[in-house]
Image (cartoon, rainbow, N blue to C red; front, side, top):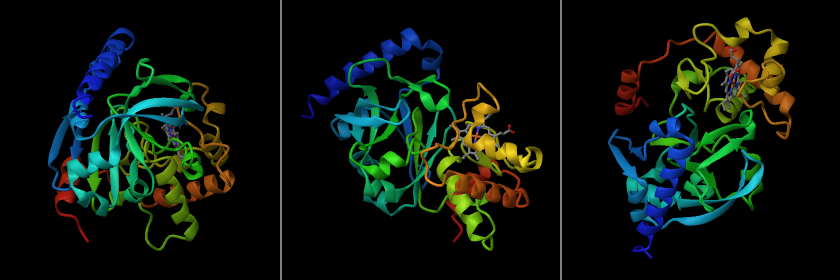
Length: 301
Ligand code: HEC
């Protein structure tokens, strides 16, 4: 079994290389074939696909590809043995895993989700096609998926199918385990209303992987709060429309609107806006990366 793995890997890696070099030369230049895993002590391990193959054999997994609204089969490594090997069983006691993508997307996914469902790191299409996809949620952009793409065994899980694309980062370049809840600057004040707290939860689920608030979150899309909040310069009716249907405002935007299928979408949008309003009077200057490192090393209770 193990002796086969490197062969399969070399093959797919080579396909990936060729495909990228032919069709995606510029993307390939910034697409490292290694990726980083960071533990709580900030120790960084740099790994390649070959290293992952030495930890656990790759499998073929059929998933419902939310970004393309169709079934796809990927070559992938199961996440659990990889996390066990790299971080030790301790990772199960952490709070969240923060994934950082080459394009700035940065979702933070609760550990509980990895314990309840099976995640995989995909690295190739089963059929050898270039490792890209047409992202129907982002104005049909063709996006490279490598070096790693987080997928879930979702075909038979209603919960996973409903959770949409927010926990499926592609172009993963780093995976970081967080033992203290990350991102203190995006939380509303503790005495904020229940609606605002729900709005905060929606923001974490649907928006934060792309946007920052007070400098914390993903770097794929603009900051929404500091120094001037979107609620201060976008009229309320346009803000609601932007969140639900951004393409009716800017035809070529790559922002995906809140999916129509989400139950109670109108209410979710309203709670999101309430959260944004509270944050507009809870501005905190973005932390410098050096301060962030300091916080990781000396977590406050
Ligand atoms: C996949 C990434 C992505 C996600 C998820 C996302 N956005 Fe955006 N958003 C963008 C991009 C990119 C822009 C920049 C404008 C453009 O491309 O037209 C943007 C722009 C905006 C703007 C306008 C900012 C300005 O000053 O013009 C608002 C407001 C906004 N987003 C709110 C949200 C909210 C609220 C959510 C969650 C419900 C969300 N976004 C989810 C990518 C995203």
